[in-house]
Length: 258
Image (cartoon, rainbow, N blue to C red; front, side, top):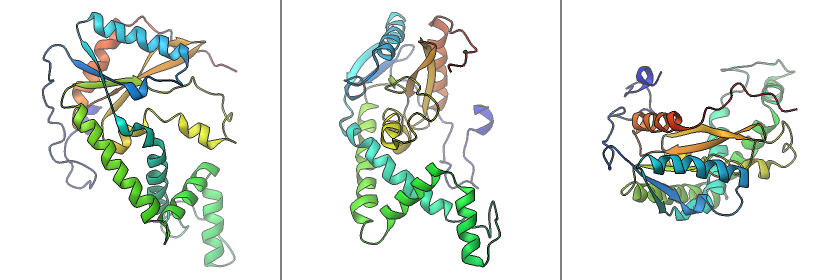
């Protein structure tokens, strides 16, 4: 699938020229793998930590070098992401008004049609993000919120640029907690958003990222995340596949946990 979709598309404004040109690994046959200290601190479920450490040991046994690195602006990632992403969602989803795109629910008049269409067509989480994003982009708040978040986003990207000068890949847990039950955190969106703390930075920094299962904890899958420099997708797949070959087989499919 990657071979089909990789490469520059001149008709796609989000496609990068040169995409698919992969830089050579820094370390030849073995890799230097960065472990950000900010991702391995307090707050990780000990069952997840145990499986991640076992996977890292497999990498070390294969001759790869594991080095501690620092991504100092990680602490701002969630706040930055949940300002930028809702703002972009708010702007992008404004087109779905029942006139030009998507669902249309007729109303008494044009304004009623807008309101009814958007009320029926968006779920509660989407509406929450639209409201957050509209607020962040509104007059008087743009500079304080959205513009500031974009500046922090640049600092987060610079952290990764600096790290990838010395390592081939960065490896982290995918989430700090095991999967929560369906609907368990619906009434606490902040706690739900904190589950993205390890993955949001890849989106902010524009990096290829991959999550792979490394075992089960109480019947639930635990993920390990690989991050690579921009346009490094091919080596990212191969690195994860190499680890997959030396891990103990995970019993799939999983049983549904009630």
